[in-house]
Image (cartoon, rainbow, N blue to C red; front, side, top):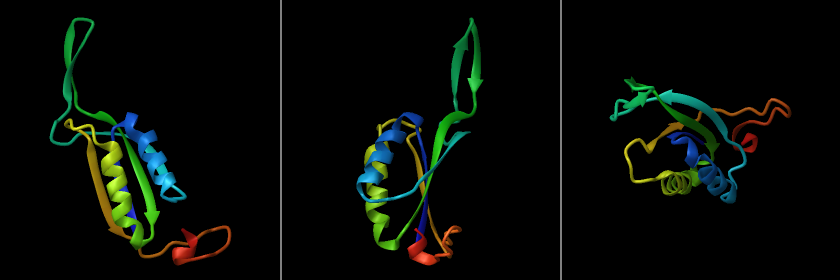
Length: 112
């Protein structure tokens, strides 16, 4: 099992969610986050004063999947989240040791 974490631009979330849903990914967790990567934020003008916005709004999408779904999930996220501009985000993949469904006590792949 794998745990995929993707940091995306907020307006791309619906496209990614629809693509994952069509693939049969049954559950995702989404968190609104702020951060920056190589772009180090940007400068904005507000009421005539210029200021630096260090942390940009992003969304963090988390999904637990079976090993065989990994490449398809990564491809779907990359395809749907890509704008071709700086700050499109990143995808992190981790091994998932154990999953337990609290309601039924199911473990492993059955709990996904």
